[in-house]
Length: 119
Image 1: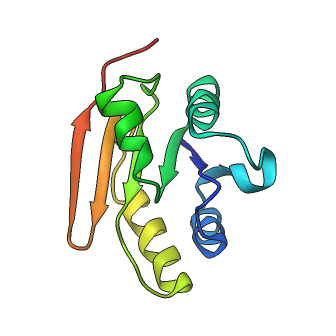
Image 2 (image 1 turned 180 degrees about the horizontal axis):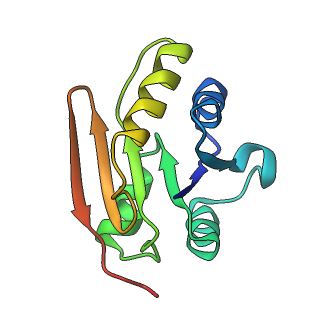
């Protein structure tokens, strides 16, 4: 499974994901400044699950039905950057069904909603 970290994703979290052996690209280094719809389009085009802390993606994929069958993981966790990075990496490695879902990760729980297929 491949991931795309949104521009607002913490650098420590991207580093932790890579250190965990997961494939992740990062909007901040690859295409900074693009809007949310372009980020979703990139995730869809590259078949990557989008990782974000940005609530706007929930509106785009769930309520407006933007192309999103790749999956989106919205993290609703706070803390020091290194701790957040470890939590993100551990959470992503704990499951293999992120694709095709809009997932919300909160302390102590993960909520998932199946997205309609766009492919």
